[in-house]
Image (cartoon, rainbow, N blue to C red; front, side, top):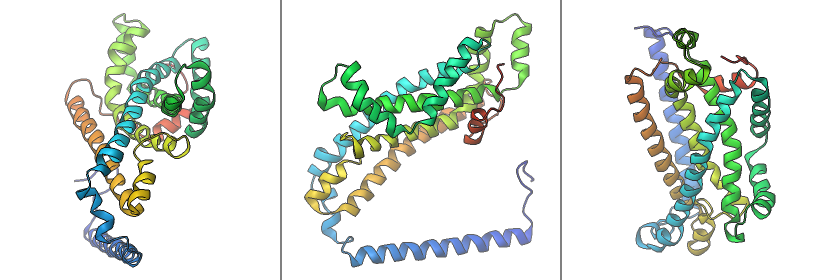
Length: 296
């Protein structure tokens, strides 16, 4: 069976693919063996480096679990704020009115162009102490949330715009034919169908939000998951083992997030509110560089 993306490989191509796969597996095994050998020579595979995660509950109750909770708290709060704000900004960029589309577009492009670290530093140095009455010990948390919301709401706005513009123009024409206004068309026709197209890119951005909380831990003193590496390593002298365990926690959390999103996407695609379109990173970048810049 042939795909729209590539032709079905023939016998020779299949043999080449198996050879390339075998070479990759061998090379990967050699790199892994070299890394483990180097860790063994440095004593990083000794049992006393790894057993604290099994035998000492304080590693989890004092460091890892509180750090994970702070990461989830900051990440979820940023998601809850950035998602609706980004949706509103994306809809604003699709407005037929220049006085709405222009300022919203400037806002989105401005915050998309600034690194999230600078936005966190801005929130830490200016927003939190001057405009938000928050104590100094929670200032890093709110600075991280502020930076994540400002940056990711701008990115989500482009995802929403790309998702709506990916729909066939006949959807808007049919809505106009039955007398629906622009707002009604957007809310009842376009957005529900665009959700399935936007979902993969949205999930990727939510994973980015969760991981970017580590920036605040590294530079602002935010007590998130990755920052617990310093305390655990200082007490147990097991930096490599600690980083390995923290990486596994990130993988499990993000895998759970993407799995839930995949289940939701599958259900939405089985419903009647799907066109089969999918918005990817390239589509969002095309939107940002001017492709399909007009309203609908």
